[in-house]
Length: 336
Length: 297
Image (cartoon, rainbow over all chains, first blue to last red; front, top):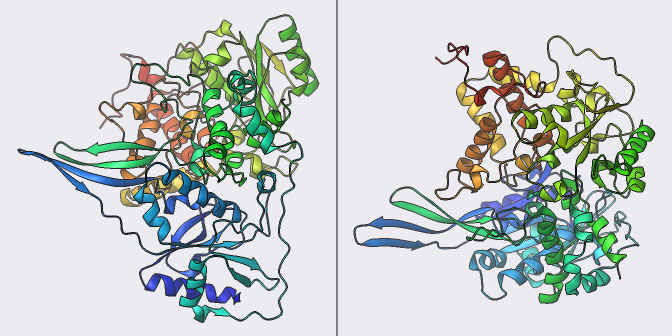
């Protein structure tokens, strides 16, 4: 099948006119970002990777999970009804789509978090193989590539003419193409553009990293301070990361009523592990950074079959001190 | 310049004048600069200095980094603008002059963001602070490296930030509200602005005070407005306009406009510019019977 570039606008119309949400890359303040759009005119298809990951459409940065009010008799609690709209994520990159199984793993692990799963049940993910990239892309180093279909329902390849060759990956993808068949055409004789393959970083061995991290004695290795001392403890890496998923529960209330919110949290914040006693087991910044690295390359692969890092490189691009995760991966790969 | 820097750093580490030199080095691909902590004399070779050295390393001098302080007396590679922050830290009693060794670098400007670098420092890729810089030759240092730079800043400050301030001053209150709420709505509460700032050294930031919760931590418009305003207020008369918060912001909130406007108000109301004299305290920290009162109407 072929999706002509001119037909994308029509697809947006069809999806949004039936109450669906259409998320696609757009330009905002000199950046390309995933955003829910009202018209196909807004879409920007000349991009490497949006600044945000699309996780915010499944796991919003802030959301009300309950309301409460006080009266003479006690406290009234109100549950939130979660009925998300059908949502299309268009123009996702293969690294981002690969993060979906990782998110699902953590939100369905010992408890089914319906705030996540109900949204996930309603999304259709349409990814586009990357024809451009930059120095910070490293998907090939963590076993992925622009050809990866993992997590996608429909996978697109751009043609020389700027149209897209359509491949349905899942049943949901097939259903989607059927429902909106008027915008898809039969494939003619087309040539697809070459994909951008990030160079695999030779010095990195993910299995070896996992082995080194699993050894208890390495937890206190002086290497951590050496590699991560410059971390300044902001949450830019975790908030733009497609697999970071930590959240905090906060109450925001007036005198007699309020709401309970689920907000993104970051293991890089100094209060993340602060105990009520005043003790903080991660008392310096490099220990907090160690946690993020352990989470991606040790806890995740040991606990789940999905990956903790998809190699999108956002944490490298946004880091105010250019703490490059691949340099740490390289440093640890050298260790025995 | 780099030769001299490396030799100086090596000497300081060899004769134990300092325990660590905080400076800049290359990333693996030599495309971006990144902070480095040099503790061994032989590693002084890693130090570099060029227009990509944008970071204000004075953030590592604060009490937030006990592990850096534990390495011994700190030698710091600093441009004039970075030294202005060091001066504020001294004026506010955060560091003692003798606790640090300032390796001052003469500077012809840096890039606004490293991504803009294409091999040449052109005026259009320099931040507003560089166009108006009066400390290209460091004003406080233990040693100064690099040739003296002759540069006289324009009498009337120039650059994008000043243009934008004039533009905003011409707006109606509701237009201004819309302008700022539009920008703040993108805030993701990552606190990169706070963490990269050497003057945000509180061990417990007001937004982390949750009994009661003074500032809502949710990234909704109310919480985002509260956070960005409280941070601006807490930096009034202290901020040196180093621009680190705007550079660190992953969602491009134009914080430089806010900070420069506050600096202009501090100058207007108190005839004070921060970061020049460690003996003079920031205006909101001192009581002075000579203070003008006519600015409160």
